[in-house]
Each structure stands twice: as structure tokens, then as C-alpha cells.
Length: 455
Image (cartoon, one colour):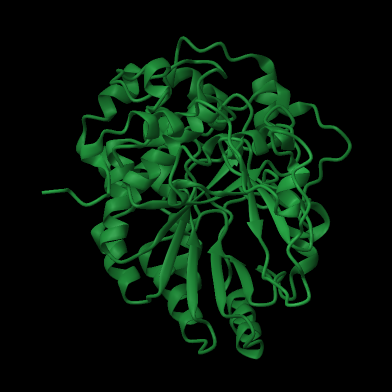
């Protein structure tokens, strides 16, 4: 097994009708057909080898010189080379073919091509801000939460995202977990039956050969206390050719297996990525998506809405929206926490709950994930809690009635109810006028009513 894992890491071998209208369609068109900017890539995309994931891995763009050769019109300053020395460059031909503009205004370009801004780092950025290394009881196994563990099986990725949270691990040296380390990790899992959920991560586990990945899955599945295996991978986005019939057939043998992938922008949803997700979903693999909030890429509610709608169409459940971690080279990507809260506020009511991720901050010092939400509780009293909905409507919600509690005989203090009246139970709601929902109710015809039809 050790030999097969080692072979994988060489750079030259594989390793409803009443829903609000989509306002984004009026202003932004991300998925209009556009020809590839590179004649070289355009020609390669027509060849049979394009569909071979191992060919995609072998032919990744690994240097600024290769990038210039692929995109002769690109303005590649000296700062890009310095940034690439700090964190390596790797872009699959497929992912590079999605670039539509040779500058950071293009989301694919910004996420994959080094930028000079990566060289400026405020003092609070750290190589390991989540302190994963401190939560490794054995090398390569992170045990932070009581019932979960994360197994880092490779440092290789098909494409090195410029916002990567594990820059200290990935890219510099593409290696796979040794047999010795894997054995120690499996032994630890066996001695800790409280761990019911194992996340296989990296790097990207799907850059490993199928046989090597199966060997790892089999070893983890042999631990009787492990209920669920999850795989974290970005290959459906950056190298969808990796999702083959052979791979999904193998995954079926180790169910329950879940996969979390990483779409950040609607431009990443292509026929190829849709096919990859379909193959996985049809094989019974539940799919989740973990996006990262990135300035200038997806920090627009309209962009995020289109992304989430596209994911649900592909049977990919939006799972997390992460605040960008405090790693070196990402300050130009980071947004204020308030921006994430604004985006979550805009999504509620416009999208069904199945399409809305949880906005989380993976806190520094190993504090783990903390959900950050808009405040929908306005105030409360022992008898009532005042809730706010996405329209700004305030509703009085009665708490369980206690025998000793007597109904208040106080009258509303004002002609129009106040929040205090809602909290005392003297009014039931404060309703904004002319919301879209109120207009629909007003315009509703008798034929659409639920009342019985009189004969």
C-alpha cells in the first residue's frame, strides 16, 4: 500500500410558483456560453485526453511561465512570482479553461492565480490559526470535537486555492499519508469509540488513485465504532473528470459515505461539474457544499443566491458558508463579519431552507465552528417573545402558560402597538405595509381561496 500511495504524489503521475423572482437574472449573467480565452486550452479541450483525470493532474499549470504560455495576453507582474513562491501554484487545464478575464475581477482567476496582495500579511494571520496541529493526538489525525475526527491523508490538490486554510500542509511537497501514520491513526480510532464520524481530508483525497483511497476507506470502515465516513474534496469543481464510474462504484461499498465539496461561485457550475455531482448522487452519496465568503468573488447576495440555487438543482445541499480563515495571504479576500450576516439576512425568505447554508466562523485557537446569524429575537418577557421575520414583521410568540400567571389587563400604551405591547401579549403583530407577500394576499382572487366552493 505504501508504494501505491507514494506513486500518487509525484507531480508527473496521477495522484414554487409564488417564489420571488430571481433579480440576478435581470442584472448578471454568469453562465452565458463564452469561448475559452486560451487557444492552447481550447484545442486541448477537444481531445480525448481532456476527460482523463490523470492527464489533468499531470498537465496542471505549475509556474508563472506556464501560465504566461497558456494565456499570452495576461499581465503577469513580478509580484505574482513572489506570491507563487510563498504558496505554490497549480491549476488544472479544465479549471483554467473557465477563466473569462485575465485579471482578479474574474472569480476563477482570483481563486487560482497568485496575486501580489498575498505578500502583505497583518500580524494576526497565522499558518495554523485553527491550531489543528495542537489537536493531533497522532500525526495526521485531528481530534477536536468529541465525536468527530479529521484524517489528513494527502497534501496534494488538483488546484491550489489561493484562500486555502492549510497552506502549511498543501502544495509545497505533494505527499500521501504513510502506512505507519495510517496505522497509528486507525489504532487511535479503535481506542476511542466516542469518535463516530471520520472526515477524510487533505489536501484532496480524490487526487489519490482509487485503489489507494479504497484501502484507506476500508481501514477506517473496519473500526466498528465509526458510523459515518465523510470525504472533503474540491475535485467536482476543479477536476470533475475524477468522478468516474469506477470511483463511485467503489464508494458504494463503504456506505454510509458522504461528500462535502467546495463551490464558491456560479461560474464553477458547468456541465462537467453537474455530471460529476449526478454520478455521486445517483450512487447514493449525499452531497454537501462548503463555500468560503470571499471579497470580490461571492460577497454579493445576488451571486450567492444564484450559486445556492444552482447547487440545489444539482442535489448538492448548501452546508456551510465559512468566514475566510486567518491564514497568510488572504487579507485581500477577507470580508467583515457583518457582510456575511447581511448576506444571510438577504437569503432568508428568498430561498427555501434547504438552500440556505449556515454562516460560521471557524474560530482561532481551536475554538471550533461558531454559527453567526442575524438576530431574529427582538426582545422577550416571561410570557411572550417578540420575533422578527425576513420582511421586518414583528410577531408576539406566547411562551408556555404558567398556572400562576394571570392575563394582563393592561391596555396597549399607544394607538399603534409597540414592541413592548408585543412582549406583554397586548398585541400579536406589527406588520409592515405593502410587502410582496401582503400584495400577493391582496391580489389573490376568490378562485384561489381555500374556502369551499358554494354550489
